[in-house]
Amino acid sequence: MTTDNLLIHHASEQSNLNQRNQFEKTQIVDASQKMSRKGKALATESYKNNSVDNMNRFDKPLPREKSFSDEMDGIFNNRPAPIATSIEAFSDRQPSISSKSSDTNSSIFGRANNIPAPTAENIRDLRKQARAENDPERLLAFALYLIDAVSQVNIDDNDPMRGTKTREKMILEAHKIIKKLASQGLGLGKTAYPEAQYLLANCYGSGSIGLSLDYDKAFSLYLQASKQNHPSATYRTAVCYEIGAGTRRDYNHAMQFYRKAANLSHVEAMYKLGMILLKGQLNQPRQSREGIFWLKRAAAAATEEVPHALHQLALVYEHDDTTTVIRDEQYSFNLFAQAAGLGYGPSQCKLGTCYEYGLLKCEVDAEQSIKWYKKAADQGIPEAEIAVSGWYLTGAEGVLQQSDDEAYHWARKAAEKGDAVGEFTVGYFTEIGIGTKSDLEEAKRWYMLAMSRGNRRAMDRLKELKKAADRLQQDDNEDKNKSCAIM
Image 1 (spheres, rainbow, N blue to C red):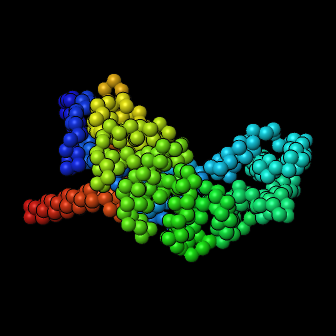
Image 2: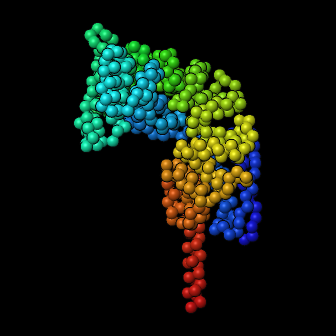
Image 3: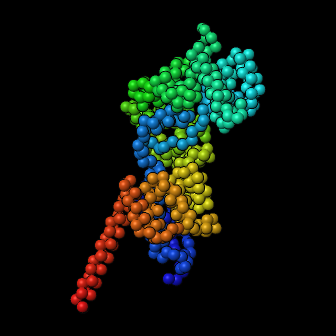
């Protein structure tokens, strides 16, 4: 087959893509490549269709079943607790117990992270200083310092400071300090320290510092700290009521504490409250105006740990699904860009899509598209990995060298996460022989996986392969019959 130009068209195929710009990518396909021009065209068409699916799925993410342990993981780490499976998934970053404070007192954790290395002399000096000041914040900082020291130093029973017994003593001392501060502050008649209550609740909720997992105690401590207007404890009290962790499920109480935490300027609570009202969840009537109000407040306070409100608010202004806002593509893009700048993978993936297809008033820009897709793909987002695979499949003149191997590599990464589009793509690449050897049985295995997750293209492809096999068998039978007749 002679060398020829392969035109790759990314055209809009559904009504919600009518205004998207069309563009062409031209890629020379050498005849020496192991696959035919027709095979590559089919693979590219397959990617194009997958890209459309990805965009739609990205805007309205597919539901994901969450176990009770998944929900609890959201509570006892510094992440927004899951709202509902229909709302986009949250970041997987899970800070350690002392890497991020509650919103009320970041200096505690700051002190714990900035004090000297955990030598015997330093520990004695810091203990003496903390006790002398008689300051709950300083004492809690010292307790956290002990916890960090134990978690960061490898066990070595030949070293007195690294021995198992010494480490156990340090944890026990930290536990006693935290428990005392959480129960009675600095003595009789003193108010319990809410930051210590919040921390101890986290420990019971995660089973850390030698404590057994106890959701009842965790909830009780969150509730106590909430009575002193501790924002993070108030938020987690709400989540416990929402999912029934350590208490009975009660949506009315959950809403009460979400509102309280939001009014205390807790970013996760503002975001969560906004989404509940916007979507009409937890048996609440839809209140778009108030929901957007809280999303805007959360977006204004967005951080690297909590960028979600920016992304959700951008979706609101992109789609105009409510009567409260007027569609504003430029504002939507700016919000996506802000969230992407904070490192939020879904927004980075969205920017990649915008620059690839010319959405939200963007000019088509292959370099920018690839840049943002790769940032999201590096965070393990399957949609972005599929998009990067597609760019490697076609290449981008002057920007990205075409590579079948890389196309397969990135599709495989998505497939191994259980992504149906990724599984279908790997199946097709394996069938045709793109970036891997052609193996029909292996391709069928991937198609079966994709089909089990509801991918219709995989189902259709399996039907086509079966028809082809049946035709081949029929032809073989006819040939055998002819041979017998001749004999």
